[in-house]
Length: 134
Image 1: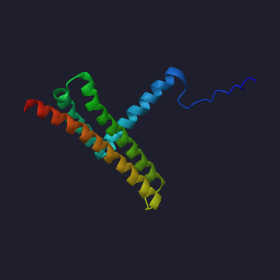
Image 2: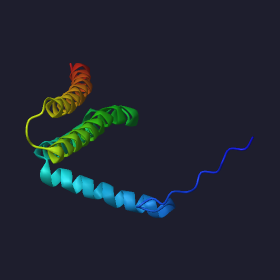
Image 3: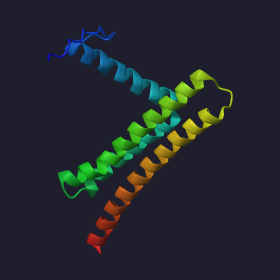
Image 4: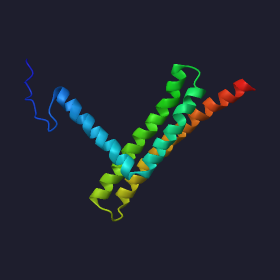
């Protein structure tokens, strides 16, 4: 038995390579909006500006550098998702609602866990670097 063909649905951003280009433009708009509107995101970008050169000094190999850098990218991803949840929640209504508060608190907790992962990975790297010099 043959499966029925599903008709192609017209996507608002098109299809194929054109869709990739439009999605990239949307991503750039998202980065710009996060940097302009979210002080936490700006702070984390500045943190990255400090951590990037330090990662080159701490890393013992390219793989080690990647292990240092991935938690930072994870932090940025979670912060973008947190900011998205906050923006959407505020769009629905700025008056207090227990579910809105819960959504914002949970998203904030996710950022905190991302920061903890970053601190643990970097703490171990700094510790190992200090131990090798002693």
